[in-house]
Amino acid sequence: MTFWERNQLKLAPFFFLAPAILIFLIYVIYPIIDSIWVSFHEWNGMDKSNLKPDGTPNWKWVGFKHYIMLFTDDEEFYVSLFNNIRWLIFSLLAIPIGLSLALFVNQNITGMRYIKSLFYFPFVINAVVIGVIFTWFYNPRYGALTLVLGFFGLDPIPFLADENLATYGIIIASFFPGIAYTMILYITGLTGVNREMIEAGRIDGASGFTMLWHVVLPQLKPATLIAVVVTIVGSLRSFDLIAVMTAGGPWGSSEVLAYKMYQESLFNYRMGYGAAIATILFLIMDIYIAWFLYRLFKSEKTEK
Amino acid sequence: MFPTPIQNYSLKVNIAYRLLLLLTLVVWLLPLIAVMLTSMRTFEDVLAGNYWTFPEETALISNYTAVFEGGKMGRFFLNSLIITLPTVFGTLFLSSLAGYSLAMHRFKLNLLVFAMFIAGNFVPFQILMIPVRNISIEMGMYNTHIGLIIFHIAFQTGFCTFFLRNFIKALPFELIEAARADGATEWIIYRKIILPLIIPALAALGVLEFTFIWNDYFWALVLTQGDSVKPITVGLDALRGQWTTSWNLVSAGSVVAALPPVIMFFILQKQFIHGLTFGAVKG
Image (tube, rainbow over the protein chains, first blue to last red):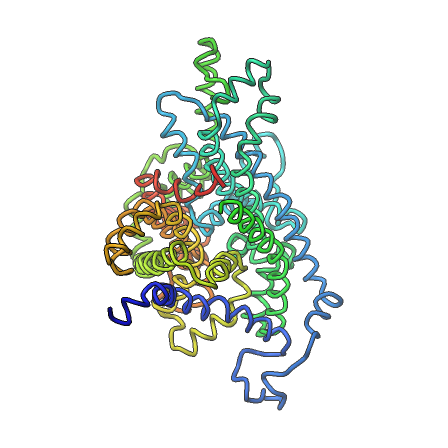
């Protein structure tokens, strides 16, 4: 027996995992640590060892200064944070709407397969296209919304140009792919619902909403869980639609943390400040990551 | 069946249901119908505020040619393909290797490595942005296709490893034990036993990843600069500024940018939904 043959099972994990782990460490794990490190510095993104034209260094340790500034001296930060909370709460509406549509189309009639795909496919359309379409829809001069409002004798509402409405306008656009996604989840979930339990419920006189609440929904729990996790993560990640539809405006009113971070770092050259925002976003997300991992490993243990 | 099959109701209810279904579908697709119709309109037609009528004078060909010729959409489309396809194959290759190992090998750090891949998958992009951009610049990969490809492979490997590890874990372990007893090397087991068995999972992940990468906007924005590398998402966003109120051109561009994932979805719907709802039935 050669050395390789004897030790194969011990060495194999290393060779199989090395490429994936290596690339993941470089592009995901190291950047997280580096970003946190950058957040404690003032940095304009230029050569770290050089000086700015005014003689101060490009890279300077400032401790918790950025975090203190964010919480005490930056109104825009609170606007972004509250917008993230708005995104979080209102995006969840896609779940009951998706469930209702899923129940509505869960029938065996001719052609239903095709009708379902037509309901699903907005999910695969990218955010730029969705953003472009909805920007046009909201356009007070040329938009379809103005046309519809005009039909009812109402004045145009400049959704995206209004400080109080812009965020809601973007969230509504996000519903289009969002509802399609939850629909896909629930229709798949519904095909797995236990028929006997439904029949038993019918015999017991349950129907309509009672049946949905007591018999069907508990069985759809895995689908609901995934829908909630994906929607929450998606709402904290919201960036694309905002960048395309309002670029954070008007006057920063539709910014979220992700967008503010991008702006501060790449447009204002405040890398450290941007990194501090990213770190806060990361800490918020960690709550979900921890919860998800906890759940996963609990179920791993029970399987063994 | 829940809700009660519609066939159990009267004919009237059945007709009403079908009509309501069609109406809902039309309302649901209204924005997309408007875009498709507009992409066929002449500029004058657009200015006249026509949305829903079928265009009298179609400018289908001239709009789409204008988008490709004046608008560089051809270049952007090609960039998207150059970035997306290698990413999908690279990710599937790396994550199937890693997934096999995490599912079938016992070693101390197994669960820790697995947790790392899952956790990394949820991380907000912004915490990676500054360092990833710097790494790309330092390695001379800023504003190159390969820079985007390598980053996408790294990030997507997290999700795909998670998916494939669970899929492989559900395969019968005896199969691998038997092969090991016969003296097959780990590489042979991966090549000849595991790979053929996980083809459905690879197909599901493949279509999903294709869509994710094709639709990426953020990383393309952060890691590219000029027209030569930009994928179609960023390209469309930039062209929109040039076209301003030529909604017919904007619409045609949108259709082109959205089309590949949509076509893929309609052809490979089963795989797509399988990938998307992995864990939604039994979680």
